[in-house]
Structures are given as structure tokens and as C-alpha cells.
Image (cartoon, rainbow over all chains, first blue to last red; front, side):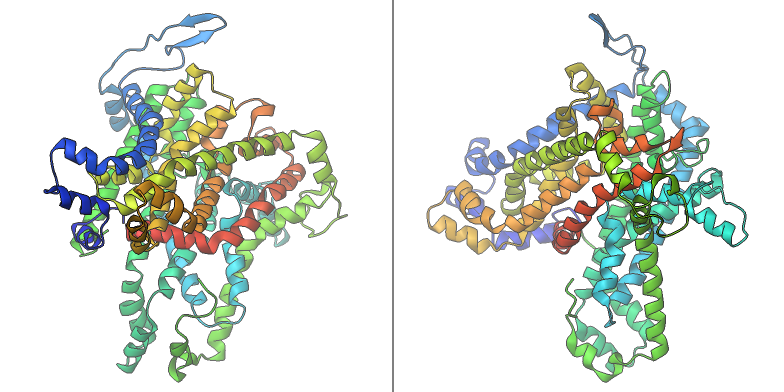
Length: 337
Length: 289
């Protein structure tokens, strides 16, 4: 999805810019540093603002976060000021202790397990529902625009507002869901107060939030598949399932690989849904890695900055490994991105 | 994403155009069910906001319709302050983010230069940064600079999300503008900066608008940093403020519903208006690479 592959660079070079033209004029394409500066200075000048901003507000905190994960920093030993007194930092470097603790202790692995279940079920359900709805909306059907508008609504409303709407529906004593069940003579369901139900509820809410994006992206993909392919397939006697299997699915590949990767990363890090719906509760039942790391640094006392950073770094490593692995699998299947 | 099908000739062929009435009914039933599920939670909040607060949890659709939740919200709570804070933070993030990233999107789209590959990877990887890696160090830095509880601190923090995203997305938009336009600029003696400023930027306005809108929405709906960095009633943004209505001690569903409606309606209207371009831009940025 993101990378300039060799073949693309070649294709781009065909219509390439002044950079190429000028370097051709001065001789070799990759000249001495001085020449490369004169050739590329405007490109570098153009990317300079972003580079500086990323280095200062992402690079530096990242390095510091990694450093904190190698220390025993917490609220009591970091540099702080109480009134006019400046108290210097007294935390110490502890090497990889935090990482060994995290990986050998049960809490990280337990949370990771639920995070994976959460991510896989959310992405799978979202994708399946989104694909189904996109396929229906891609047909000629009365009222299509109206349906599309309604189906897209969960995406249009700011996420934290929707989460509160769901919390309102889930409320055990006063929520609409339980009142409707009571009307049918069914006992109240502890939607957010029982570990298993809470897990189901957070997944349901997140799927509700995520389907419109999937649907719209896949609908875009469907509409870019040339109709002639279906026509030809029909001539050859392919039935609906065969057309779906051999034309629609391959035609959707590039869109779906992108949206699946994006939505996996988003879901893995989906802070607001868990945080606002259950705060990770009951107990720690719905705590995913991100919310637990947040809890370490902002909700427990003393705030444990070191452990929080350790979990953060581990999350980042996991996601990067996943993305690299994902890309490799696609490469093997001949898909380049 | 047009409503007219791009393949009319297929639709008109007798084989595919035909659908049994039963299948039509099934499709409509599916769509109606899905639409009800999609709309209902939002609709329910809207209906609740129009009931007197003491009836907030009744199952009736309408009950003594009144605007008292709205008047209470605007008069007796800091809602407008929160709204203003959110507007300020999200607006500044958008303007600064778009301003910083525009030239980068252009450079990455048009030029080949040493370091480009690394930069593109960085832009991509920073988008998968979990909030958990950065939140502690940024919190400590903001604390030491006295920027906690300040809109400026939150704006700087949001730039960590907005800048890589905007640069990436604008690259996608610039890719859709033909290179011949750049070349005509060079022929006329414009520098690369002049070409960018006078020729490309005006053409990219819709793309920039979409990018701006998207980063605005992202900042508008951000929860984690806002909850951690902003405390005290007068400094909260909306995401933090709404949490005040519903906490472990009790829930004021009436004002919460009214606040939700006031936050959601403008956002949803703009969103529904802009979303066609939004998806085009995202897939252009994401798929083309």
C-alpha cells in the first residue's frame, strides 16, 4: 500500500520531473554530495517542515518513551515541581527488566490475548457486514441513496458521542435494551457489568462504528470493477457465486488488503470505545493493551510511567511486525503495495 | 460512489437485470434492518434530548416534548466553553497541520530525492503509533514546559497525528493532478516552488479541503490525550466534558443527550456532504502508494 516498488518508480521515472532533467544535464544521476544538494535542495526544502516537526514532536518523545521503558520511572521519582521546589528525577536505569516482567507475567499476555480476540472479531465482522452491504448497494435497487445515507450515519457522528449513545442503551437498570427485554418477560442482561456480556457489547459497538467505513471503501472498489468482466463471465455460463468468487473477490483485492490492514491497526489501538464504554471493566475484563497502558500512567497510584511505556513500545513492535508480515504475505501472492 | 451505476449496459442485459420479487423483498428487508440498526442509537439520543430530564429513560418515543435539556445545558453547564475549546484546538490543529504538510505531499508526489523512501515509511509508520507509546513522554514534556491544561499543548500533541496523516493524504491528491501541468510551469520559467504555489495548489483545493476536514474531525473526536492532559471544568474539550455527565456516581442522560445532539448534528451534516470526496482521497492516498 505504501511503498514505492521498483516497478512503480520506473513507471514514474518515465514522466519524471526536473530533478531528473537537471541531473541529466550535470552528468551522473547520483553525483557527489555537493551536486546532489544542488539538484535536490528544493525537494528537501519542501519536506523540511514535516521532517522537523516529526523529529521534534514524534521522534524525541518516542526516544524518550523507549528510554523510560528501560527505567523504573513513576510518579514519585520523576522530575517535578512542588510549589517553588524543583525535585530532580531519581529514577534509575534498569535495563530490560520491564520487558522481561511484562512478557513473563500473566497480565500482559492475558491482555494481549483478549486484544487479539477483540481485533480479529471486530475486523472479521466489520469486513463481512461491510462486504455484504456493499454488494447489495452495488445493485440496482429502489431507494439506494437513502439506504446509503442511513447506513453511513454511524461514521458521520463523532465516535465519542456514539459510544455514549450505546452506553445509554446498554445501561443495566434504565437502558432501553433491558426495558425492551423486560417487556418481553426476559431478565435484565448485565450488558456492561458481566465480563462475557461486556466483551460482546464492546465488540458490537465497535462493529457498529466500523461497518460504514468498510462498506463505503468496498463499494468504491466494487464500482471500479469493469462491467464487461461480468458480462463475459455470464456468456461463459458462470453462476452468481462463481462470478462473486472469480471476479468480485479478485477485483476487490487491493481495496480490501488496504482496509483490512488499516482497520486492524485502528481496532488494535481503539482507545475511545473501550475507555468510554467500560473503562476496561468489569475488573479488567475488556481492557485492551492501549487502555491498560493508559491506566498504568494515568489511573493507578503511583502512576507507573515505566510500565506504561514498556507496554506502548511492545504494542508498536507488535503492529510493525504484523504490518511487515502482512506485506510479505501479499508480496508472495504477487500483490505489491 | 455515484448513485448511477457505472455499468448500465450490464444492468440492462436481460440476464442480470432480472431479479425475482422474492429476492427483491429479501434485499430490502436486509437493508431496512441494517439501516434501523445504524440509525436507531443516534435517533434514540435525539428523542431523549427532547424529553424532560426526569423522563430520560422512558421507553416512549415522545414524552412531553420540550427543549429544557438544551436550555439547561447552555445555561447551567460549561458546555459552550467546552465547545469553544474543542473548536479552537481542532481548528488550530487543522490549519497548522495542513500548512506544514502541503509542500511535503507535493515533493513526495513529484520528485525523486535521496531520503524519499525513508520519509514515506516514516509517514506510514507514525500513523500506526499507538497513543500508548507517546502519551507518557509527551505528558512529561508538556508538564515540564507548563503546557498541560493549555490548548496549545493539546494542539502540539494532535500535530503528531495530523501531520503524517495530512502529508500522506495530500500526496494522494497531488498524484491525481497531471504532471503536464508542472511541466508547463517549468517551460514558462517557474521554479518548483512557483509551480507548486501558483499552479498546483489552486488545483488541489478540493483535496486540501477534504484533508483539512478529516484532520478537523480527528482532532474533534480525540479522547485519550484530551482526557489525560486537560483537567478542570473550564479547560475540557467536548470529549472530556461529555464524560462529566456520565460517570460512576450517576448519569445525567438528559443533558448528555442534548449535548450529543449539538455536537453531532453539525459534524454529521458536514461529513455527509464531504464523504464522497473523503473516500476518494483516502483510497487515492492509500492504494496508489
